[in-house]
Amino acid sequence: MSAIQIDKTIDARGMACPGPLMNLIGAIRQGQVGQVFEVLSSDEGSRTDIPAWVAKARHELVEVVQDANYAHFVVRKAR
Amino acid sequence: MEEQEKPLSLVLFSGTDDKLTAASVLAVGAAAMGRPVNIFLQYYALDAFRAGRVNDDHRLSPEATDAQAPVVRAHPGQHWSELLRQAKDVGEVDIQACALSMDMFHLRKADLDPIVDGIQGVAAFMASASDGQVVFI
Image (cartoon, rainbow over all chains, first blue to last red; front, side):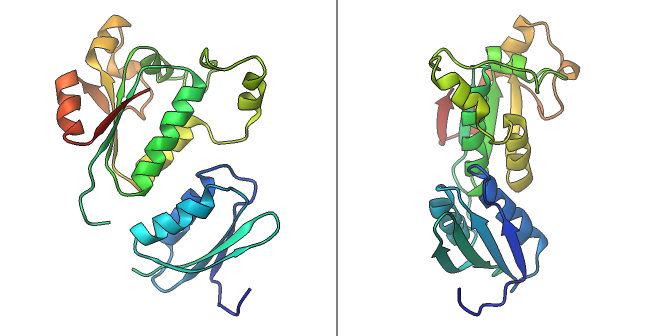
């Protein structure tokens, strides 16, 4: 992982689709513009859903890092 | 998500937990992506939305084989009613009971779970569906 400052980590590993995305949406709605959220997800659907939602909702996908059994999605609340 | 998206309209006919879950996943996905969602409850699906019965075992569809049924039941995903609540929370989701089915089962609005927003005739549902897709489940 790079040296991005994470404001909140959402550990959604083990949750089924679309749970990790829904947790991210909930956290972003409660957060402040500029805050950075990290979602840990083992759900395959997150790999397509989180980037699609982030683009649609016009936030910023900072990075996606794939670990052995799960992925990290780092998202900045842009508005 | 200011731009107006075409609505997704789901007609729920089947009242089994697997189909209700599959439909609710579509609803929550569409709502998250900014599409208005209209849900029209008919026949056996309406019965599953009766007050106090949402969390009952509504069984699985006939498509589920003996080998698949335990796998489906054991899956730790969220209950369809919880998915629908999430859909309402993130987006614009309207759940209406079909007036004909209400009449068939002798139901009144008070007999339904509060997640159901109202009772609608088919023409009003089609008016809300507008030029978006209508999916029958």
